[in-house]
Length: 374
Image 1 (cartoon, rainbow, N blue to C red):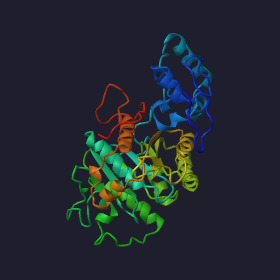
Image 2 (cartoon, helix red, strand yellow; image 1 turned 180 degrees about the vertical axis):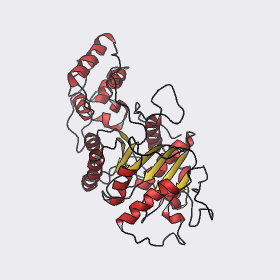
Image 3 (cartoon, one colour; image 1 turned 90 degrees about the horizontal axis):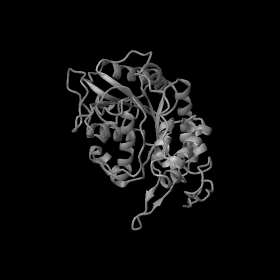
């Protein structure tokens, strides 16, 4: 089987089932040539066997990204080829309970922030889609719109100014039951400007988290504004975050700026749960072929920088633009979104693989590719 060379990707050698597994072999080719060998990767804690990156990531590259013992991984892979033996799972680090060292909010089990460092990459869209994913799976979900001066979450979900009931701090709910708090729900007009300095924005985020009546939530998503200054820093330092999801686009310039947010999370010791590449391509009308209008995917680069898996690549889709403008994001379905949904649900699982209910510790599960939307 010969891997196809595309722009931005190294040349790959043909892989033969008769050869031993080497460090320069592509993970996807190894998995396809030896059914069941993905269990060896899984035992070592390498989650990329089912995600986009495995299409061009080598065994050595995957081991480096996830800080694995390459020699031991190769030995176990070749032992499987020879005898079918699967090693005992290595002890993997579990994510800490929500916001270790920070005061949790009663009734909220997990808090996940969506970051990018770069404006216009689609953080709010990804926040909304992830919330829809968990809600469809029966979880109790909320969204804190931390983009105080440029909120877009309410419009996407069909919520408008003055949606909050008078005399209460209860977060309004969408048609499917997602709790939402946003500055735009407090304004007289949704296009009214909020002209605030950084400390006021940061204070509003904390107040939304602490003072709003969220009720019982399994997951609260925090849609953060771009940059690495007051607002994102406040969320990472003050809120009991389980981790962050990083959103990027394929352009080199965008990736460079998003990398700043990755470095910020790493310096503040906030776990990076996954990477989503938005506007990754567009499907050409009539041919159905993908066209990378902003250049080749930077997914492998972001995976290497963050040490987190690529959860999905979303295309430019006129349908989702239409639904968001009409307040109907909860009705969106597509194959790329389905893949993102299934991969993220693996992160939302309990620490015990046999338990599928909400709550518990967060754990990175095996990622999949080619799933359909739920």
